[in-house]
Image 1 (cartoon, helix red, strand yellow):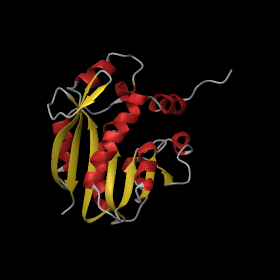
Image 2 (cartoon, one colour):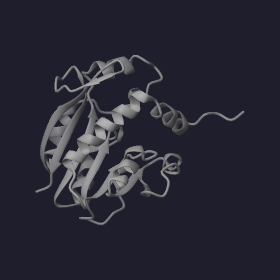
Image 3 (cartoon, one colour):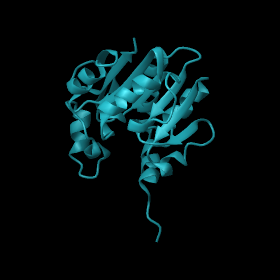
Length: 203
């Protein structure tokens, strides 16, 4: 009997109307902060759902993930590299933008990952990290489910992550994307917004 893999379960859930609307909201946010011609590294890209959408917008995207199973689902639209975030196998100053789309909090050592991020970015390059907001109803409801992926989160202290990022970047953050059940709405309230988005510039 064939068991359903974690990647297969993830792809199935992502096909739902709710998650498609979430992805679209995230995409629109990113498009407001990206520039034409940006070369992008997406860390923790998984099967590259968002990354494929960015390539459709004309961006050159490289995806990095520790899961070869997930990377096997990325298709040909992006260059996929299997490696931990802490050991990005790229030369210094290779990218204009590094994205962490709900992935930085799952990294074992986010400090080392942020240090590597700074190294692979060009001067003036940007880091955009979409962080799950532990204070949100969205997060709390999912954490109550013992099988939810949010229980694999390793880091929930958003202030500590932002402070660490400020060692290498000019960092600022904002709450984004209110979620109430299946309903999405604009909100920057810390208990309504599902995401805290950290935007950083390398000096």
